Image (tube, rainbow over all chains, first blue to last red):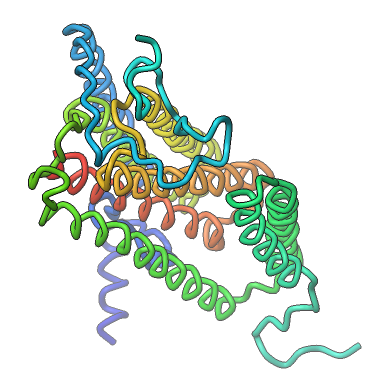
Amino acid sequence: MAAGAVSRLSRLLGQSRPPRGRPMSSGSHGEEGSALMGKALTFFVALPGVGVSMLNVFLKAQHGEHKRPEFIPYPHLRLRSKPFPWGDGNHSLFLNPHVNPLPTGYEDE
Amino acid sequence: MTHQMHAYHMVNPSPWPLTGALSALLITSGLMMWFHSNSIFLLVLGLITNILTMFQWWRDIIREGTFQGHHTPIVQKGLRYGMILFIISEVLFFTGFFWAFYHSSLVPTTELGGYWPPAGIKPLNPLEVPLLNTAVLLASGVSVTWAHHSILEKDRINAIQALIVTISLGLYFTLLQIMEYYESPFTIADSVYGSTFFMATGFHGFHVIIGSSFLFICLMRQLKFHFTSNHHFGFEAAAWYWHFVDVVWLFLYVSIYWWGS
């Protein structure tokens, strides 16, 4: 009976409720509302936020390429308890010769 | 002709569970062969059979649900429970890596210098690319919600647009992470810092790729008119998975990138 009253009230207010087939939505983004709001949020909030972050990264990168730290053969770094199963077994997968030294030192020194 | 007198789905016999299990065996034994016996044959065979299984099994589910009408409301309910349970299992999977991280970082051993980040480790600045990555994933969470509302409101064009935005953001995240991996001054072999960092972020990245692929399939299905405004569970499952991936990233960002630096 209460449910009937609620639905009559909704119709009076002229609202179109989206179908109930959405039992789950993420807490922070799941607002009851139209797709238009989602589109507005995407293009006026979310994507500009991404743009600002991109600008931030770009500016920080301009700040200056720092000199790479000198090589200290710490025993807890550049561990090789077992060779890597590719190449010569001594290079990690994303190894960047400019910033990642091998256990014996930088490769391009 | 006999009719079923219930609303459940009695699935026809299918070979895909068997091929899936065999592919899992091939992948695990293949990894062992690769690590210890320098042979990638079993691994490649396992990966191929795995991909074929996934393609054919999910294709059959789409046929049964979208084209043959077997996914009644109660069947859909079961699928929902299934997806929720799967995501919970994934949460537990990541919990393990977070446990490992906190175990090592809350009480750094003397071998590391007694502090965290360990001696000789220069962590990534959390306010540079990691912050951009956070913005990208949060934005994709907004756009996938836009996509969902569009589907609910029978707005085909907007649903397609929103899915494209979401997938593009996912790809952008992946590209940024690959770049970060390549530019990083530390590797996976650099003490437990490197191990925990790359295991946690690596598996997360893998899940981003899975999530993006799932959303891409949804885009293809939306283009082919598979979804209706009140029956689009495949999309909802993809959206739930995507939000899960986003939440894991937020935890990663706060724990490893921010607190851990």
